[in-house]
Image (cartoon, rainbow, N blue to C red; front, side, top):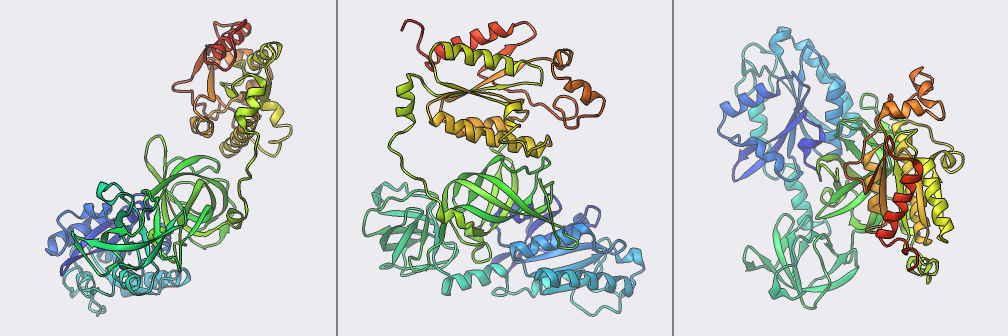
Length: 582
């Protein structure tokens, strides 16, 4: 599961609390200005039990024992407070303190405190947080942090430090899960390493997420479904009769088995599911909105796959919990979405096992974490739809046409000459006897994509559909030309990634905006300037120029005929076409 600190996108932090031999993890969250830093400073100064490097806990695992929700006594429960509470409920934190801070600024009034407590408890009950311990505090003056203060004689409950100290080992979420895992939950061991040469394909290593494992037991490896018998369980350098949840182990098997990092070892009597399409709850964390159709790297357990959100089913209104229609998710939004992966992965529903049901989405270019998610269930079609083998493949179809199939992707502003040049290229290839097809932006919008407008979300979906059609045409052995503005780099990268190496050729029709406006063959720029055409690329919607196009055509100095000739020559040089006379 993603780091809990990331889920609130900057408004939450996790800290270590030393209690006995085990550090307990707790989360502090609140709005900007609610006093998080002041409270943390008090905790650090007031006790040696707080880690001297609390921010290091952000890199710890996803389990949080407890959470402190900080609320400004002057402002009460806010939308962000409800968002934090909902996220805590989603990731399974059940021990919650409501720290009503800045009580000194409301004259330590009991009525102000009780009104906030009633509001918070009512919302917590709706989202499934049964236990909320309210504490009135003043982080600035230290009231009820480590010691009770006389300024609030009406409060007889614990201080914050007392509450932390009484959160005993065995009562925390993490240890309760570990105990349940050792006794009740089925075995889940994400494979992290298989590189010990002495094992010769008969072993692997990783940390047990849930359940137990013993020598002599059968285990199943997913997604392959192969089974083996455990011969040895090695923990901390020595053999064990049993290993339990939370322990790092090396397993050795009686027989050799095909196993790889990212696989999941399971109890064959209660295995995880395997699917490539899911319904999941997603918390979006990036400045740029989530748009269905874009591809991200999905990290789940010890494996990484390519994933895209195919549908936003609804967004959750954090104030009312009602479900709202949405075509994108902005930063900090929570939505229920359908996802599709490029291959099947083993998983459990997050409610059953957060370790095998939680995931993060990562931007493939910047490597930034953009979302965290919790799998709810596999989509039924994931189990019912299978690839059908065909005897005539892409190579056979291309061979009979005596050409190498590919997509020549023309991109550029409206008026850059994409349609004109791609049409000339297709005419020249047709005259040479090659099998081609031209997918033009305007023509596609009269049929396949007639239901789409020109918002960012519509543009992403427009290109996603075109890429899928182009990929089918390449599989048919054709040379495909596409003439689309395709303004976003992410979608052009997605198109390249869907095709085999060398099958995607990006042609950038490089035209300055002022030149494109002067041409304005369809009168669209004039409409956009008059405000009659919204979301027009180059005017009120961005165009992201290619950073390293395969071909760049300077259309201000190159004629359409010259451009077409140079592209045909490029196709010959790349081996897509045979040279004349060859």
